[in-house]
Each structure stands twice: as structure tokens, then as C-alpha cells.
Image (tube, rainbow, N blue to C red; front, top):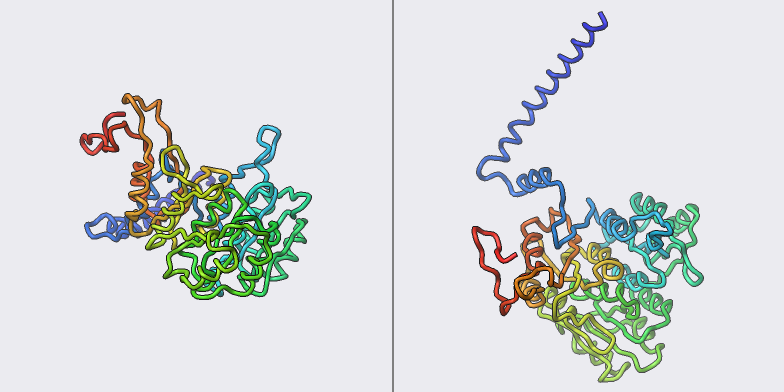
Length: 415
């Protein structure tokens, strides 16, 4: 009797599976027909992949901005801390508003990138303004930041509710809130907390597009806080922050005059001095990111004009990905942010990657310098075809006046 019941159960299970399979088959087969949607093809392609990284590009992302920040944090801080891996535990975690609910953009989150650097050493984590995001809470527990003599375990930045601060403290963490009446004052308070260093980055407080590349340098060096402006006017909080610092100091405007006006530039020159204000700009955000990657003045700027460097890639439409990825500029590839887009690799980015492409002499790839990249974007935003193009442009090729190697059957030769 016992075996009869078992046989009946097996038959029922097989019938249920057959019915489910038949129900799913039309949808699957439809996706194989000519004219199947790109999104269907992309989903099928993703399900057949065993890795989403490639030989020169490491892709890191989560299903939303909260878990993308966690993914970057886990990439850099795999943990747990041991004597063999003492850097696996950060000094701080930096909790910032995600911009995913009430407002589309919280500029004070970008200013928080200046807190990433040594000696604090910690990731950006996103939360909703009134509720601690569960993914961020879980990552805080996993990271268990050490804190330090002059900084807490958790910085709470900008428009985040007191209830979240209370919850963080109930979790057992020492927390410090930095928030002003608006984003301009919050950025000025971060600047003050860092001791008003001698370099200042100026971007728009209501538009992150041209200003986003600044977060990579802030994370990399930590000596260049970010202050915000309006299109045609310096807010009072920014003016006070500039006037409070010791001269001489250098001011760097990110973006063209259509983004930050000549009038604001003149105001900055009146405060800091004509020779102290420099504009770094392209005619669009992609070009501004390249201009910033190339720029160097004294101790400020990447100055990358050749091979042997790291980069990270994000879209200007997802400022959260660009901010979270800035951690790799400090504890990863130590390189600038370059922009990609959902529609394809921008020509400005492509030309720059071609210009700094590594080559090797004597047809010997063991002598090659290497470029590498982190792609902070999901495949739904930046596809694998674009990733493959970036990967190829980061690949070291034989010397020969910058010429591409001969192609045989679609594959590069010479390696």
C-alpha cells in the first residue's frame, strides 16, 4: 500500500510538471521567433550566462540602487577582517538618501563622497528618507565599521529622518549626523567637518550630470570637498564656506557655461582670486568626464593620458550608481569615472579609451601594461554588447602606431 501511494504521487508530480511546461512553452517559443522583443532576448541571454564579468571589465550591480551600493561594498570589503586581510573591515559606513522616493535627486549625497577616503575608509549605502532600507541595514551589520578617534562608525548625511538615526543607534553603532537646512548648507558642513581643504569642486546643486565625475576624485584623494551652486548664483552657504577657508585655495568648476554660468565663475573669482578658479568642461557630460580624467593641475586631478590605469563606468542617468562606484576609485582600480549610456558607448568615451589603450612591444603580450574597469550598471541598463566593446578597448594590443590588429574571422590576431 505504501508503494502504491508513492507511485501515485510520482505520477501526479509528473503530470503537474508536464502541464506547467506546456503552459510555459508558447511564451518561450515566442521569444525564439523572429521579431522577439529585445528584453526577452536579453533575459534569455542572461539566464544562459555563468559570469557577468569579462576579462577586463568587472560588472557589479544589484537589482536596485540600494543593493547596487551593497554589491560595491561587498566587492571592496569581502570580509571578515582577519590578520591576513586587515583591510576587510571599513572604518565607517556613509548612509545617504537614495533619491528614489520624494525627490529625484539629493545632491548632498554626492558631497558625502569626500568622506570615503582614508583614514575613514568606508562605502556609501543608500536608504529611503524615512525608513532604513533593509539591504543597507543588513550590510551595516555585516560590515560592523570600526569607527575611529575622530569619526563615528556611521555617518548619516542630509535629509534622513531622526527615526533612522535612532534605529542605527539601537543597532549598536555610534552615529554622527551631518545635515543643514538644504543641500547647499549640508555640503558646507561636510566641508567644515573635513577642515576646509585647499581644493574645492563646484557643481550644480540641482543637476548632477556634469558634476558626477567629481565624486571619483573626492573618493580617491579626500582633499577636495564638493560645494554646490545654482546656474546663475552662488548660494549663501557656499559663499560662507569659501570665505571661511584660508587662502590661497583652488576652485574647480565642473561643466560648461550652460551648466554653471560665467556669472557664477566671476563670483568665485571675486572670492578666491582670478588665478584660483579653473573650469573643466566638455560640451556634454560624456565629454566633461573625459576632460576631468585628462585634467591635472599641481596635486589636483587624474592627468591620465596613457595606459596602465583603472576606470569605472556608469551612466549619467543613474547618479546613485556613479556615487556608489566611487569607492573603487579609492580601494579598487584607483581610477576616474567614465560615462556610458543605455544606447551605446558614447563617442567621447570610445575615443578616450582608444587614446589611452595599452600596447605591447615585440608582439609579446607578457610585456603589456594593463587597463581595467568596473562597470556599475545592470545588463538591463548597459547591455553585454556594450560591455564587450569596453572590454576590447581596454585590451592590450601590439604596438604599431595605434593600429588595430588584423581581424581574422571576426577575432583579433597577434596574441
